[in-house]
Image (cartoon, rainbow, N blue to C red):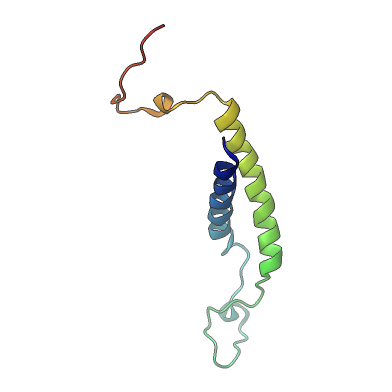
Length: 93
């Protein structure tokens, strides 16, 4: 795997992890019953982006190591995922 591919893989995993982690543990102003004037009831009250980014970075790094190991050392090929049997057969050598 090239370095560019490894970086892109990490960034994709980071953003996917961030999208999954954003609503976890979030309390809204409506939940707390204390609404700041001029804001929506769904506005967060306890959002800490730095803490969330650190947690997401660690989780994405662990996922990246797993996916990287599977890609580089796992021995999987596209033919292992050919459920439709449309790939041409490999010639025996």
